[in-house]
Length: 98
Image 1 (cartoon, one colour):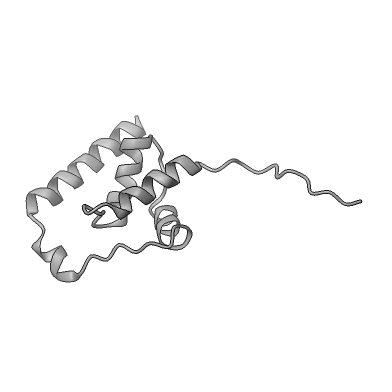
Image 2 (cartoon, rainbow, N blue to C red; image 1 turned 180 degrees about the vertical axis):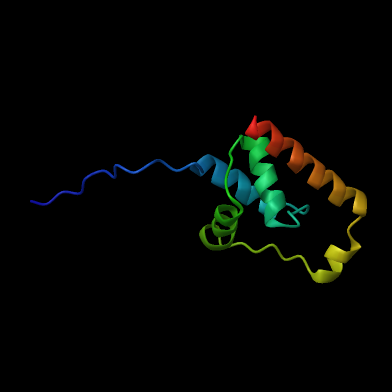
């Protein structure tokens, strides 16, 4: 009889536990305003370095969620928040590169 062999490929970075916590965070009132913020959150909370494309694919297609941020909401964002997000991303990326 034919049997399926276990895949010899690499294991997933996103475990079911991490996927579930991301799903809960997406259902929270304070959603992510961008996939970049979700990427930063995964780095900070779960110490996972994952590409923007992978984050987008995970949220949009695997979890079947959308980041429904209208253009007016983006314009209403406070400049300080944008600077804080950019600064924290630069700090994380420089720490990872070292």
